[in-house]
Image (tube, rainbow over all chains, first blue to last red; front, side, top):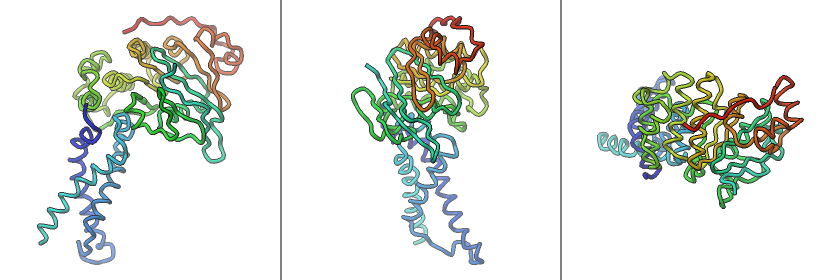
Length: 99
Length: 243
């Protein structure tokens, strides 16, 4: 018998990685709307991680998986944490690249 | 002793009061059918009982534990399985993967055995988006079979299915009850539900009435007049053998 987190992570992590890349892309594209260059704003990595968690919950909803996860005993906060957790190493990597 | 109880629950959506004092009781080894006209609050009562919706008042009890704010993930860990009136399965994940998730999480039954019992073995490598209505329902029940829940709460499981699929689904519910599961089902498919049920509950005017066995329910004047209608000819359905 596995814990809710161990059940959710293998499914969520690959999706969360893609979602993190999309969130980064969208955030980098936002300045284009005001005529500023691409990537001209640099949001805090913590904000990106938190945003990824929120977008992840929307992703679960859009995929129609809310009741499936609930029946597995996986709470929303675990799903949020799984999506946010995937963004942490990605943000660390990005920070290293930018150095 | 009831396995799951939602006691004296009330719920309003804005100005509209759907439930005033309704109760749901699930008993191990029994299939209980809840009847009621559309909009009388059957689905709302089920959602409250499984923790998917919070009541304005009332309490949900699972065994000896009372939950003032029950949530489905918590109740699921105690053995509740909720089969909603819309699709339960994730359209984007292969059926085998979804069954395996339940197998790994709860470790009650092998996914291949559940797929065989629900006759969905041929669908294991497919995604639910391509299933027919009957296949989808059988696949959803396969999840419940892997889970082997203490309580299965199924909201309108017969909707949109052929009579042959009704019989199969009834067989699966009876088989789960025979293993000690408490099964609650709702719907309007009177013959199928009466054939499946050991006990009938009537949900009307924001409250619930325990009518007893299907035979007792069919003799209930107000239930016959208001819900079954004058053309209902009585209980002439036969229970199917356990699958």
